[in-house]
Length: 329
Ligand code: MLT
Image (cartoon, rainbow, N blue to C red; front, side, top):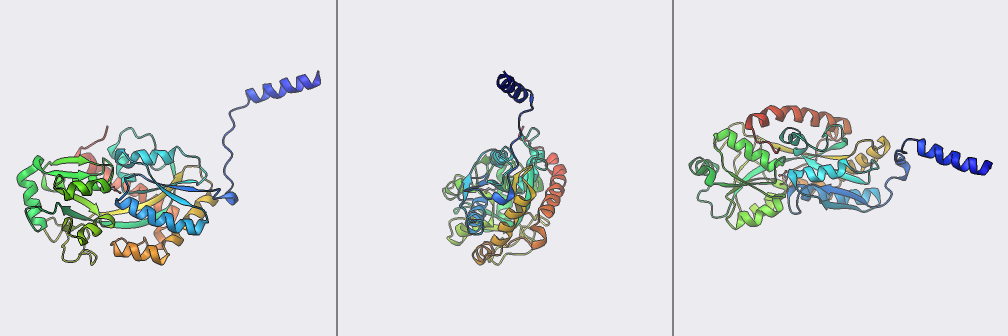
């Protein structure tokens, strides 16, 4: 009887109890096997380039495989949401760029909140952008490109990696600067853009140097201007947009790592340590410098500095994007 009562009592108690929350992962057990590094754009682009460098170096530091996984679509928001929905155990990490901030304005019904759905790990690298054109573009310089855009308007095919991507932001700023609208052609990342650009089906593109430089060096695309305050040694002979016709046209694409909100701080700190060690790895530093995108200074590699920067960038870009009026939903 007692046994029955006990059983019924235990069953009754279990049914009445609130659903058990997943046990918080124990930091000392981290990592518990393969770690996924989600790259929210297609292979072959700038985010993929940085992500695969980080994954390889962090694998060495963490002693497990950190596997880069491209989850594309929605200007990066599909991949971002995958991590927002993941277990808060550090086994799934997101690498994302400035789009983490701009999507907060561009998408009025995001399934996640860039600030409250994630723990920030740290800032990785600020990447310059460079305006490039198809190889048979009728002109040699940025002024020629600006004239082409002013004269051809929506007959100009401008690529981007979706609303919320860095390339889309750069394209939006160009159109706002010129007061001209062009035809925006969306891709799942820079990787798929290059065959269309080299094939002449895309006229112009604003890409990050981390994926554009190899195509510039092999003369498969024409560089027109960089978006930095001073010319880049890694893109020799190419002026800044400011020098070549658009004073003040400067944009740098910052990147950060994130995990799901609620990930225990010891796990956040362990991932941050692996990231910081990766950004000291001579192979990573050398490659990033070759591509014009050095690691962030150490004081910006902390979770707190990253969170403060993200919050500030959401506020910085909101009025600019609202004025441009290009919303995803
Ligand atoms: C990529 O392929 O990583 C995208 O082009 C990045 C972006 O435009 O935000």
